[in-house]
Length: 164
Image 1 (tube, one colour):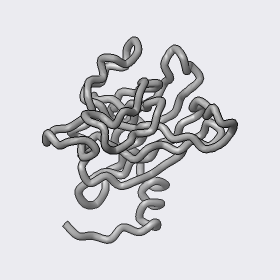
Image 2 (cartoon, one colour; image 1 turned 30 degrees about the vertical axis):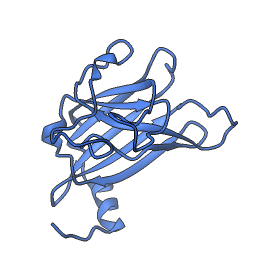
Image 3 (cartoon, helix red, strand yellow; image 1 turned 180 degrees about the horizontal axis):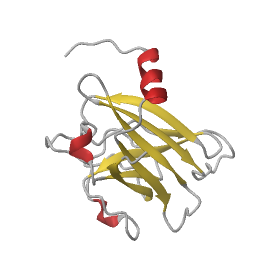
Image 4 (cartoon, helix red, strand yellow; image 1 turned 135 degrees about the horizontal axis):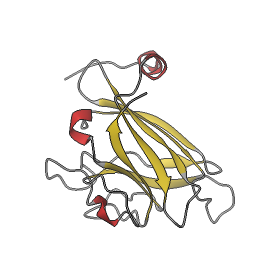
């Protein structure tokens, strides 16, 4: 499918529509202040607009410089404990990493804050409900199998239908 998406289209969706699903992100016991939301919006064509806003991400060991974090949709919507029950990256087609449907662009934090919005052609909201969004301590390297060597799961949220 060929289409053109403009920044005006994205701004209109973000400003005038409510998300169809949302994940309320909470940090692990080692990062209890980490929090935020990941919102999922329907588009007028296939795919999903995903918008994330995170607060209190851990600072880099190199001062207040920008820090990158792995950012994925995982198979299971269980954010208990140390998030060990989230399973693997969401991957209904059996693709290799980094081509899982749940592989998303890394988050870039500046002084503990990250905001991003992007189009994802591989995710349909109806298929990801009750799965989880996971933030990893390290950035995804986009080559190591099976999941990009992103390290420790530091935050998690279950993707639920929006009530906003």
